[in-house]
Image (cartoon, rainbow, N blue to C red; front, top):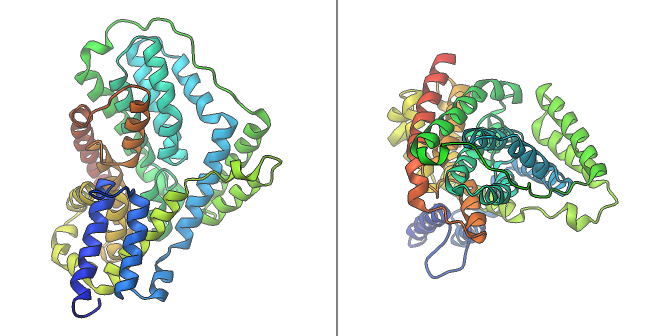
Length: 407
């Protein structure tokens, strides 16, 4: 950390960056999480809190490569109509409100385990709003189920959400080991979502559904076939223990060999890549300054107290600074735990499930609320909190018990 007046300024920049990332904006400024992270990183460079070489070293190329690869795959699947096809098929099977909620939760949870959860929210939210309107149902409980399921489903795999990408790349835990350890938590979590929402919205789940025309889903069969073939190969690569980041990158490159226009194939969420890059640098500044080690030493007796304590600290930190920054802050210390693999899995479980606590808890929640608002449906903070609190508490409690049992 620099000396003199630059030192307190650097701490202030770090605090403002994390506060802005948690809230999603800064007062009086039109900035989002990506621009806040980039500006924070640049300010720390200017203040000398981190050197140019340290900033380069902070960039986790493996995680960025994995994120890029999964985004390219998601774009191709979206263009092929895959997500709409799966969502519409699941919704078509529903005959009762209970079944409709169950199918939404299962479809969102399973798809989020295979692909980044934010993408699933983007694809399924319009379908859920459209169908519930046509059936003359209240969209709110189904939207809450969708958002919560994308978070809980994503806990099952390394590729399910951004924080798991970081954990998978940093820990070296094999894809199959990660899946077998956390998939049961995702499955039980989806049951918890269904039970909590049905209990809270008892009036909505009486009787049978009416009839309604299904939304039209357009598919592009040649691209869909290519995507499914590439995804099948990628799943085999993951399950057989091949390096995750290079495998995803190679799979994405196969889809870029195409007669489709490149700008469509590369219409990625560049803001997310920028956000990760900036946040890597800001977090590394905390590490090189010694602030991270000092913070960890102060909390080490609690963190090392076991799975329950680490889960509660992680969940609390995830709701204060958001889950990706929480994982980056705790990442350097995972090797110090008596059982590092168990600590990594606990970090993945708690940081992901904590995202269901409030509407602001995860980007997935905000995507659902934002798209619904543009379609005239208002998912309020209070309405989400009513279901999010019991869903989070019950799912984390089960996660703690499960990880303690599998040891």
